[in-house]
Amino acid sequence: MKKGIDVSEHNGNINFAAVKAEGIEFAMIRAGYGWTTQDKKFEQNVNGFFNAGIKVGAYWFIYATNVEEAIKNADKCIEVLSKFKGKFTYPIGCDYEYDSDSYSEKQGVKQNKASRTAIIEAFCDRLEEAGYYVSLYLNKNYIASKINYNELTQFDLWLAQWDVAKPYKECGMWQNSDKFTVAGIKVDSDIAYKDYEQIITGAGLNYTTKAAAPAPKPVKFQTYYVRKGDTLTAIANRFGTTVQQIAADNNIKNWNLIYVAQALKIRC
Image (cartoon, rainbow, N blue to C red; front, side):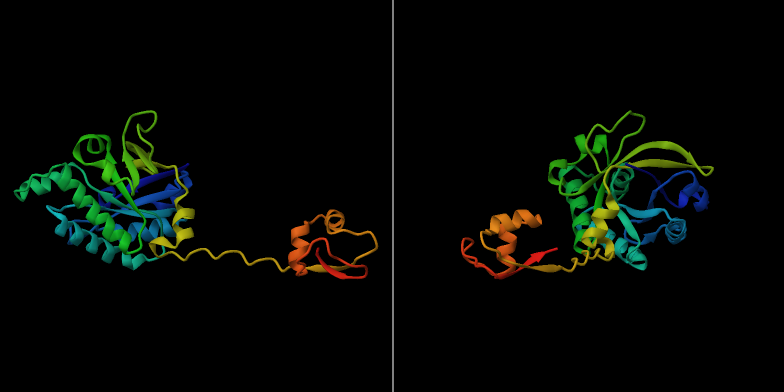
């Protein structure tokens, strides 16, 4: 479990070193919103947190009336993120909430469960196709009554639920307060339950470099010459190995057929 915060341009200039000193381990940073607008502090925040040794993820606020506009949101998000390939070892959040619905209504479109679900899924699918690890930023009300959540469970959940002792639903990340103060600024606080860095870098997502498998240790052998009365079982027990291993290393087909003075390779 790791402690984090989420921020946007509304949090102003952040003292990143002070945030690190107060034990914050990751930051979810707003990248932008709609299909035209990058957050004014995004680049400053990404570089500041990253250089301070704080792991970073990002999120995008959705303004879309339909699936086509959701994909435009996703494409703009991908464009903005592309400047920082390899830096995001936390998810890319899809942020759909009340202001997303208000935007649609101002455009003359009233959303329902099915349409909201389709918008969210289209955005997330586009991000996944581009190689990003996606998380849904949703509150309890949206999960329960505003979307068809059962159609979106393939995506990670970043649950917003404040002023409770624990999240009501299993999630990868929990936004547990909007009244947290760190380094003199008021921010939302988050808890990550998953080891996102291992998950994301291990799969090479978010344009990180997939961790290379450790090089196999070189196999060393010693030579043993079979003596009268020896069996493979007795030899294996003597050297702390198995009959199967000795047979494989020496291309022995019949485990009962060995002969005196036969040279056997035994793993050290």
